[in-house]
Image 1 (spheres, one colour):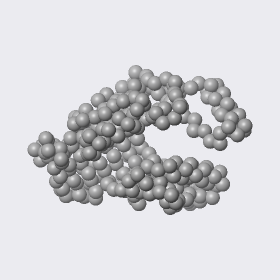
Image 2 (cartoon, rainbow, N blue to C red):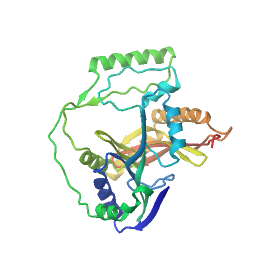
Image 3 (cartoon, rainbow, N blue to C red):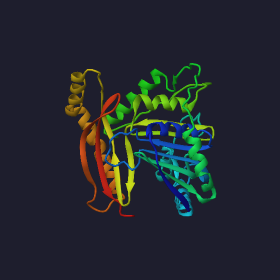
Image 4 (cartoon, rainbow, N blue to C red):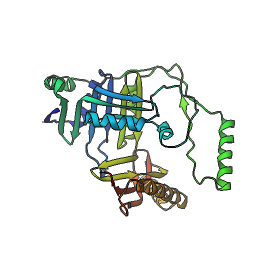
Length: 324
C-alpha cells in the first residue's frame, strides 16, 4: 500500500531539475520527462521513481514468465527495461555481438518513492514503510540548486570498421534483391573507452538540446541509460494499446520559409511515406496478435510533427487488447 499526497508548486520546470538532482543520491532511478511537448496520449509531464524495495533481474531465458510472476507478486508500480535480446525468449534466435556493458536482459524494480508531475500539481506515492520521509524529502528537493560538473574530452569510436560495414550492407542488399527480406534495421555501436563523464550532466545537456517528449534518465547502481527520443514505442491504457512508429526525418532551419519547405517536402516525399506505411503495416500485424478481431485501427497516417532539431513523420496505430 502507498501513501499519496498532492501539492501545488510555483515553478514546475525548476522543480523537475531539482527533482532529478535530488534523485542522484539513490541507487535506482527512473526519470521520465515529456518536456511539455503537446501529445494526445500523455498521462504526466514528469515521473520519478527511486529506491528499489524489490526488483527482478534476469537473462532472456524465461524472462517474460519471471516478469509476469514478479508483477503478480508486487501488484504495484514497476520501472525498468526490456532489452533487445529478449527476442531469444520468444523465437529461435541468438546474438553473438560483443557486449562491453554487462546490462542484464531484463530489469525492473518496485520503487519505495514515486513523484508524479502534471502541470503545477505534484503527487507523491510512497510505500508505507517510508511515508514519514515525505515532508523532509519535499524540503530537500526544493532546496537543491542546479550545478555543473566538467569532464575531460574523450574519443568516440565505431564498433564496425568502414570496410566491414560496407560488406555487411552489401550482404543485406543481396538478401533484399533475392526477396529473402524486405526490410533490415542495421545498427552499429559507437563507444568510448576509459571515458570519465557525469551522466547527470550529460542528460541535462542532451535534454536541453532536443527537448523530446520521451526523455529518460535511468540508473541502476553504476549502470546508466540516457534517452532523448521523440518516439512512443507502445502504451497501454486499460484495454487500449497505442503505438506511434516514426519513419521519415527532415532537418529544421532557423529561416521560417526554409523550415516550412523542409516540412512540406517531408510530407510529400514518396520514399519517406513508403517507409512509414511499411512500418505501419508491421505494427498493425504485431498488434493483431493480441487484439480483439477487427479492433486494429490506424488513427493517423504519416502525420508531420516538429521537434527542436528535426521534423518527423509519425503514424498512430491503436488496438483493443483481448487479454485485458
